[in-house]
Image 1 (cartoon, rainbow, N blue to C red):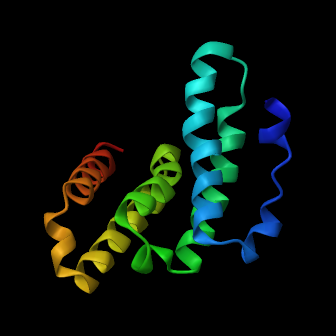
Image 2: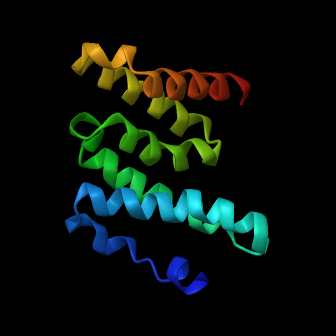
Length: 125
């Protein structure tokens, strides 16, 4: 299992679909955090950094404007986990861009909750 995490080569991700990118972000960010609760020897910082690279691909390709908000939330989570105030502020601005391009998104519960907790985290950093 650890080899699966260690063998990610982010440079090859520029040609992958949004589905492939988001599945790898979830594997690197979410699965590694849950596996670490049992194994306790994963380098979460390394996996988070790899997931952040994929998150940046998501942003670079503007998938946050074309893909479902559920996917975008998972794509943004590694950046939020980094606790980097500058990067979290970037997410907040992207969330506002999403909302300005889609008036209905403001009523989406997943969007609302993610935005609220991202803003709260930003204020506490």
